Amino acid sequence: MLYDFQERKFQARLLSDHEESIAEVQEVENLLNSFKTKLAAALARCRIKHDALSIDHILPETVRNQELRASTLPLYAWINTCKISPEEVYHSLRKKGYNKVKCVLHMGGKVFAVDQHCYDVLIFPSHLKSDLLNIDLFKDYKLIFQDKSRSLAVHSVKAFLNMDDDVLMVNTGSWYTVAHMSILTNNNCTKIFVCGVQPQTKHPDLKNLFTQMGCENIEILPETFLNIESKDNRLQKVKVILLLPRCSGLGISNPVEFILNEHEDTDLLKDFSQGGTSEDKLNVLAQQQYKQLTHAMKFAKAQAVVYCTCSVYLEENEAVVKKALELQDLGTKVQPYRLSPPVLPLCSLKDIQLSADKFFRMEPSEITNGCFLSVLTRERDPSETVSVRDVLARAAAKGLLDGIELGKPSKREKKKKSKTTLPKASATNTNSIQLKIAAFLNREANANTNRSETSTTKTPLAQKSTTQVGASSQIRKPKPATSPLAPAFAKNTPPSRSYERRSNFVRPRPEDRMVVLKPVEIVLPPVSFPYAVPQGIRPQALAPRFYYRWAGPKPVMSGYLPTTSLTRKGEKPKNSPSSLLRRRPWL
Image (cartoon, rainbow, N blue to C red; front, top):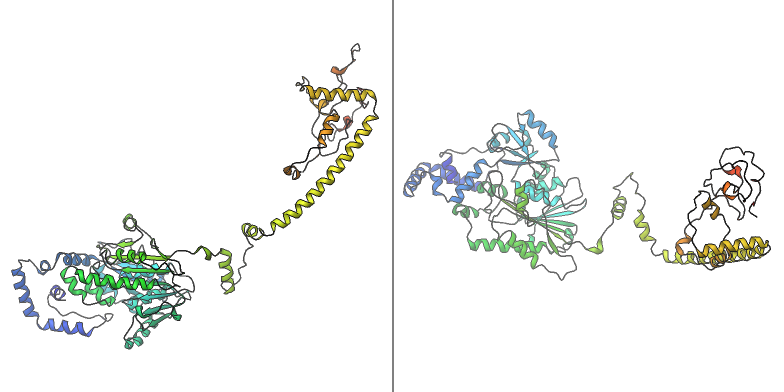
């Protein structure tokens, strides 16, 4: 405060309408103002004693770096979407002369930008704060100033929420954090529980604040977090716990403003003035953070815990989270927690590098304050896997899918349901198929015996010719014929008895049962051609040649050749010589 008083050249500070007046702060400020002449002389003597050019050099180097970053640190404000949409905010700001840019760093004039990590957060240059507080957007709680770290924590919680999941917030600090969480879940059936609020006198003021901001789903619990049992009936629908523990806050560039806005411990100012936190106090803070984190992990119904600090010490960040994961109770029936990657978008290579070990970090810089964020989620229970159809059925039962018809079950689900009934059906089908095969074999055996009886009544010449053909087919393979008509003639020769006898005992293979055999008609030309003329007889003219083709499925009787009228479709039969009308000229 003395440093701030020096910066203002010992002039009285004017309070804005939006600023909250604190009696203790006003008392100290009035005392400093009454002794401004003596304080100025004391500062001059102290500067000469330490050989310092100004009061800045009396402060530790870390504090000076913080002040340097704070001078350029932009302002962050989130949009109250319950009262206004982002597009309406952009339009209202443009009317007042503000221009939308990609980055506000080192830019003068009235400009603003949209944050890359949070879609509802706007960024303004620091020199515009006094002007922004006087516009209606901030007076009507449509835009709210708050540090970006709180918005990051709230958006991380929002990523894990379903329609009817509740949230438990611990050590929220500023009530704006609670309001932001409520506004993000305003369209859901979510309820926001806040614990750790002791003074009952502030409840009417809080209710008035929440009413003005449009928050309706907030419930304040009077107990401290460690005194709340994990099986509390009020918290059975809590799925996500947001833990914002007390920390050293060394990642904050403007600690005084942060402590006042977030209602943090004022004892931290002593640590800030010395440039760091003592080891004893750091251990005490780390122990408190560990107790709160392990207690949050005991809530059986909770599925995620978001842990966020503004510290730069490993003892308060990674060490606390890793210790809680290593020492968690694995004997309970619930699934254990594991470290999950950040759910926030990684917008730069630096964000990716800082989040390589699944922790989200933001280092103190001229753009943002320091921040550490960790997300713990329960491992998924394999026995509780829910299909998409089950989720849609639940939504339809709750009336959330009015007018939407559920699709038919997929083929995969049908196969799963029919697995138990398949063996019985397959056994019945197998028996029926076997009976059909046996009947078919009996019919074939009877047909073959009838054929053998009729073949004995044929002339000896026919028997001799068939025997010769069968014997020749068994001894040697037929050579390729020089004439294209020869293969067709060879295919039409009747099969031998030995082949018929063997075919009676061949069992059809299982895969052959499924093949549907289609009969094919082979149309052959007449057999009286120049190559078959007997010796000593010279033909008067060459017999006309006919083209043959594969025809449709018509049965062909063995031993008969089709007439020439079937050679082509749509062609009228021609007058053929008498020799061509003879059925079996070779006999």
